[in-house]
Length: 184
Image (tube, rainbow, N blue to C red; front, side, top):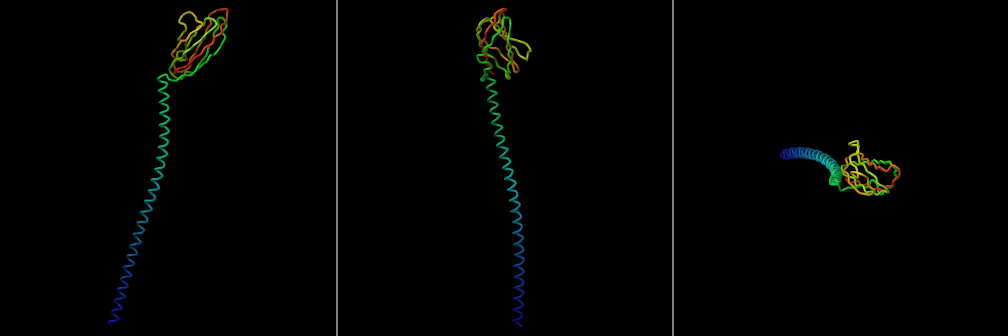
């Protein structure tokens, strides 16, 4: 009977041990599952953050390119504002004008600046400079009379600049060579 009692107690103890092991296994499984789910959530957050980081890096590159472009534009505009740029509109152009005739040329001058005209002619001539801004000629060289050679500067506005060369002599023609430099 004592043996039976010992066996029964051993069975109960064994059963209790199995019950404890089963409960511990369940708790361990639940803990593992909880950590696994938390790990998966963190991996998902990490992937989202990496995507956001890549998007921000792309945006940063784009902004750096825009900044570079804007700095280049600022440099260009500073050059224009300080009249550091120039373009030759006509370089040693040679024309013939009949007696009492004229020749007119139009140039695009997109910025405020000035033109410098240097010329020589076989006879006396007159230069007029105008603009589509005023729709008229606003400068004459020489101020009075006519000249066969010279150099002068005239301010210009944005838009179209017109240059007219007149030969006031009624009979003989004139050969004119001129250079126009646009400074802006």
